[in-house]
Length: 235
Image (cartoon, rainbow, N blue to C red; front, side, top):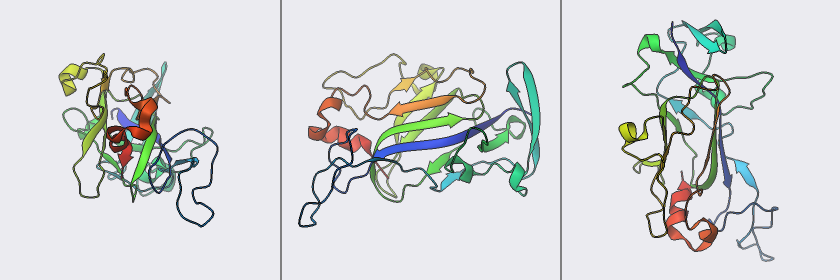
């Protein structure tokens, strides 16, 4: 038995708009004019990840296995079995309706099965169409991994490009300075690396929050920035 990687929820906040105009936190406005033609508007934010299909490269339960979790000063052991609904931790539990009093989570196999460096586990969320993503939140049931990355693509068969990198060893893992920042004139599509979310604490319930425009010099001029629109564009 050994530690495993588990995530309880995945949230993608976006502003749905047919013509990908300015994203701003505002009351919902009409997106069509009096003649029914599309017009610039301030639509509501939505969680595009809710009930979407997530494809995972690894999930516990096939074959059934025991696993243990460290929660403070205590260690609790459980059983993962894909054939039993009450003991299954499949990928569908990443984007279901999450309640703190009845937590559900996806979980990988444990380190006993070799799920550790240099092996990796991939979670792929297919949005079905293109959106402008403004905010990503990951909530972990176990402690957060030492290193992980968010990638995106803008076309179904297009290449994946790094969106945001996380590591306790940014230089060694990704060749990035964790204290780096973008200056006016830099390529604002560049993915940065941070060590802020890679500490072993908390042992459960840790969040990772990522704003796609944070730290981008042109964020306050988004409507005129073609580069930032490309950065926020995902499918």
